[in-house]
Length: 157
Image (cartoon, rainbow, N blue to C red; front, side, top):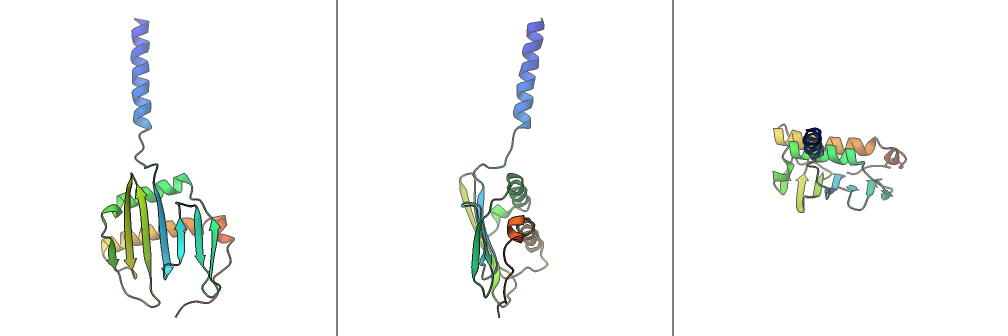
């Protein structure tokens, strides 16, 4: 009887462990996120690099890795706003100098590219996308690596 009890307990333990370890975060999730004026700021998680636009002083690139937790937060947000079903190109509000956002996303063996030209209006999809960009830029700008970079010099007209 003890053997049967231990066997059942072992089986339930295995089922519990498998159920708790279920994680729908794809192991192949990586992305390139370009933003800002002429989309010159670039976070590339494929090769672990960040490029900052210094305006008149050109570009500077550094090795930069997002933590697994940050990547999971970003992926979950993308899923929550149904980003993977966004159109490939979105025309936002025009502004000068030209700015926007570009994503190249890989997940679950799939690829998704999104180009967002311009800024956001008050529509829900625009505001959700804006929150995603704020999340990613906030993560980048809060890092010590980013804060050690030089300030941008000048601007664009």
